[in-house]
Image (tube, rainbow, N blue to C red):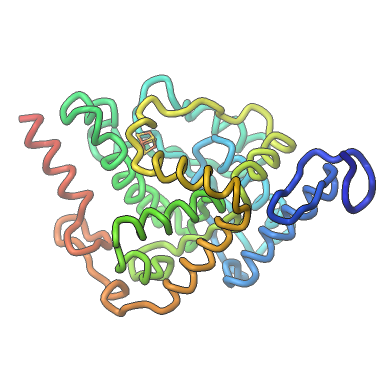
Amino acid sequence: MLCSKCRRPAIIYQRYSGLHLCRNHFVADFQAKAKRAVRTHGWLSPGDSIAVAFSGGKDSAALLHFLHGLTCGRRDLRLYAITIDEGISGYRDPAIAAGIAQTLGVEHHIFSFREAFGTTVDEIVRLRGDSLSCSYCGVLRRRLLNTAARSLGANRLALGMNLDDEAQSVLMNTLRGDALRLTRGDTRRAGLIQRIKPFMYIPEREVALYAYLHVEGFLAGSCPYAHNALRADVRNLLNDYAWRHPSTRHSLVRLGEELSSIGTGTGSEPRFCPECGETCGETCRSCQILAEISRDDE
Ligand code: SF4
């Protein structure tokens, strides 16, 4: 197949646009979409410090490469990479993330569950069973990312979520009937470092291709507890449907944005946990989890 724009050999076909793209036109299209997302949301301003949640996997490796390219000529912006070590044996060696950050020349920091919470996901699984691994890990990782970014003085937390992730979240919240999450814009809640997601309009397979083209040695394995992730069913369902209706993910993300712009008011009320001082919902889930684990430990 030849590139729809220049007739060179194509490396990807975008089903939703009907375009075949060569390497150069793919990279140009990818970066234009990510930059447009940053611009339209007002996600970068002079003086910003951006912490990138950097696991060393394909999404975050692509994100670190993209943001490094976007900010490296700017003296008014700072970029850090943050790696969270959840303590899952055989998965996510922080040294690999450190090596990629070093190659790019990006300041890198590692924060661990062990240091922050006195436990690891492996230990939680031993105490509480395998099935809750992702619910516990996700809550604690979000909290640690927020406190880590704040401790570095960052005012933006960049996440590698892609179009597939975002569409799955909208569909999951819909299937759960979770109107609050659907109508609550979470990026500007008090106490939360503002989250930015430059790849939210770019399909996962394009983010993976961008990473393959630009970053050597990113982590490719999957977490041993991934079978417990709630979104696995939704991912399969959506992949199947989107194969027949290629613009479905874009439509879901647009729907999610429209609903979150409505806002209900209740979701935007700042609440802070009396135990840890972090921002939280009705109850601080991370403190509940830590209390449960320490009870089990006694
Ligand atoms: Fe954590 Fe689950 Fe993701 Fe593994 S798959 S890193 S346990 S959230």
